[in-house]
Length: 183
Image (cartoon, rainbow, N blue to C red):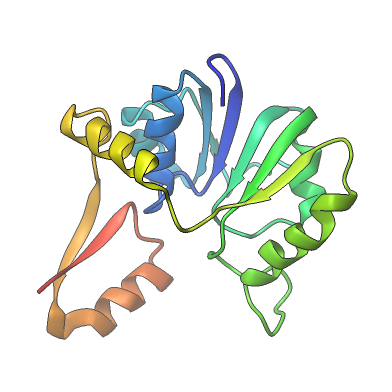
């Protein structure tokens, strides 16, 4: 990302999405957050410039075009995600989220397809998130947290014995931000 670029974050009110909105703003991007209506105030408070309510609008069918589409949900095909990009733009896929089509491999199917298709695509870049951040990135995140630029948002806390309830809440209730287990 470079200052002034436009990023769309699909799943902006989730555990990773709330951090992505904040990091996007820190990098100087114009951030569009995709979430449901009940989370508009949350993502706006984190710095989102624009919000799309996915229950009313489909960003892959809108006229908006972005330099980066960061997909944390996995509810759109690669073709549809690429439709929301500017020429030369990047789709960034994170494993997790919901399955698109009920495949045996679940939501990882989109990430696997992205890795297979990426070398064949000329007009856009397709990347998957590397889950092993390097020490430099972790140091930057620590500095941002210490400065108050990156603030963790906690939706609910559960005791260790309530883990099944916590998992149900995350899966069924579309938890906002992070759900914490107290040990």
